[in-house]
Image (tube, rainbow, N blue to C red; front, side, top):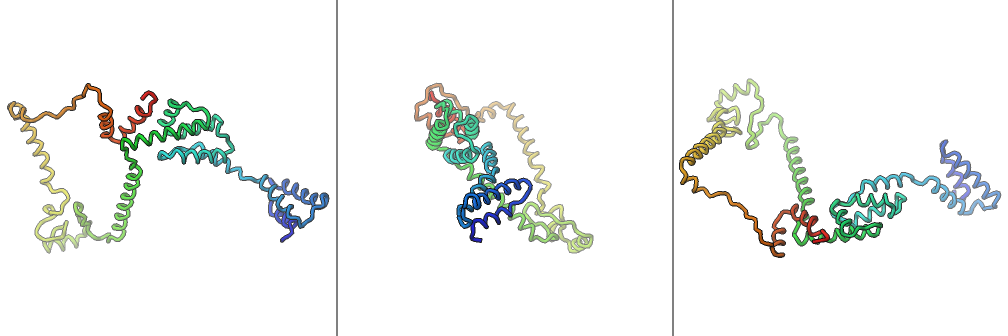
Length: 306
């Protein structure tokens, strides 16, 4: 069907339904006017091209704009990637039909920033327009990352969490595969968990006749004395005996001051009242954990009066 006029007629015949019937009727009249009133040739490619323009304008995907607006409300800056957050935010703003300098759009951008970063932008730069907010967020995030590098903060939380997840999956796979191939009637010989399954009367009589243990099914002892038992009786009494001995020693020490004085007291950290030098302060901060370092960066180094 090479003739554009025939292609348009065929195309319109496939568009059916009560909600679009008026549009189809209107386009059929338009096509007839172009050929018979405006003397457009039926083989003119312009007829087909113009019909595609009319169709695109009438049936544009309105869900694209709605989806972009929905994603814009959920968008958050992740893993410290400010440039990626800004690029994605600008793309959703364009798809949603917004303007970047609209007050509601700026509110969405600020809401998507981490709270410490947004606070530093306001305190240090007090931005107002979109360009000012974008420049301030990039600059403050760059300073924050630089301080983390100086203080030696490790960015390994994500790697550790993914590693833990992999180890957990590996353990689950190994556990499931082990139990999938295991004979349900076999005895569990896992160290520390050795136990006999529920035996029948015939099996118990057979073990008794051979003088074997009901637990490990070996000769030389009974099940209550089995060395593979998970909790021997004598293990539970040991802590109580030691606890009683400690109390006795404590009571003896109360009467003997020389023995009490021989125990050194717990060391105490004395707070120094002198002012720390710059190098000492940096060494003190570097010796703390990552959470404390991040707190110092946000509440001291990133302040305007620091």
